[in-house]
Image (tube, rainbow, N blue to C red; front, side, top):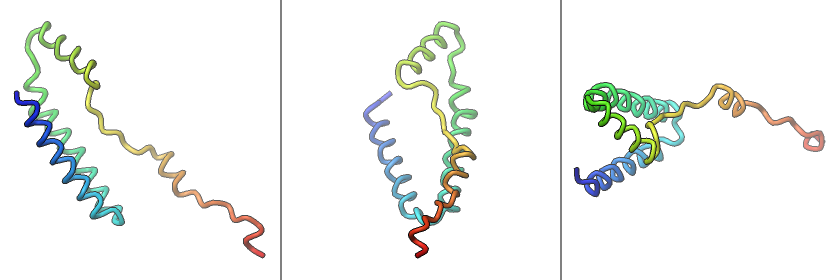
Length: 100
């Protein structure tokens, strides 16, 4: 495996995704679609490519898990919590001196 080639390609992909997000930064529905697409590709890669590639011996699986833990753990796509979303919707109280 050519890790430098992979790193270069991943950097380019991340930059393209970031640029796309910036292009639509004022359109929350488009950003939501982007996040859903990333979640879907994550799931598809995990289910269709990663899981079938897992080692079939206990020792090899142990080594993979150990390497995963040493290099950042299991990939995870965090979802915004409803509580955090609701906090963003709270309206700041109007101060009395602004009404005068």
